[in-house]
Amino acid sequence: MSRTGDIRSGLHAPEGERGQYRGPKPRKDWAADWVPNNEGTVRSLPIYVGGASLLAVLFNRAVSGIAPVADASSSQSRADLLTLGLAVTNILTGLVWLSIRPKSISVVKPEGVECRRIQSGLPELVVSELLWVWESLSTVTCCRSLVIIYDSICIMQIGVAAKSSAEDGGAVAVNPVKLMQGTLYQGIKKSKAQNYLANLSLYPGRSELPFLPANTQAVILQPLGDNGIAVIGGDTIRGFTTSDQTWIAYIGEKLDVTLAKHAGEISVLTQESVQRSNS
Image (spheres, one colour):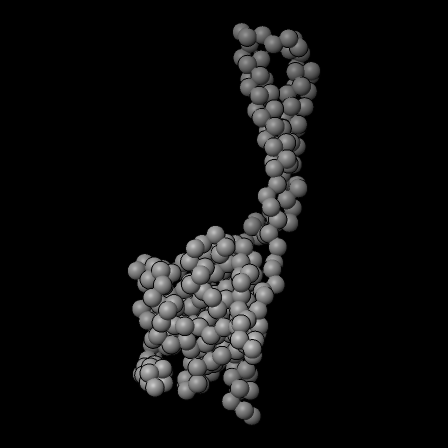
């Protein structure tokens, strides 16, 4: 079997324990899933609560023998007036919720070409780990593009990439040096924390990511220790949930540990890349 076949067969077992991965996985929040699926009911709920409260107050006055005319000296009348005010407020709130609806967010098909570039010379364990990361992210989240840079070289570019203007129409290559000199990388290097660009079109730093499809909707910049970065492009505005972001942070830490163990081999590849660029 070819090396590629071996790698594919071990996507979910980068450390030789197929099916035994026990790392963190994103958990679904039933409330967060139920509310969007029942949006009309949720928006109408204040109207139902307010209407039921209003009917309950009227029914109470009808069966309790209290005079229908409000008496300021009666504590019961004052309580009923307060309840009526709250009921009307609930009804008005429900009407406002029904009249104001947010713009629907849909999945966008990335405009580009399929790309699968992995730095040659990497240890098989590292390649398997990289492919496992891509398989996991593209399956569980809205990730459609993934670029991993470590020690100033692009060790993997996979998924949908921007189409080159050259005649071959291939994928736009990543310039690691230029990216690591940009404000996006310098920002996460300084903060040492994940940076989530939930709506990429609103950020001026979009120009620093020319290798991503032009209609990429969201991006996560995940630092890999002090020497690398993972650029994760999504197909939906605000498509990465809080659980996704936390999970990606854990994956980044795991990948950083693997890459750090093979820093020597990667450093050799970096030197060879520099020599080729200077020759």
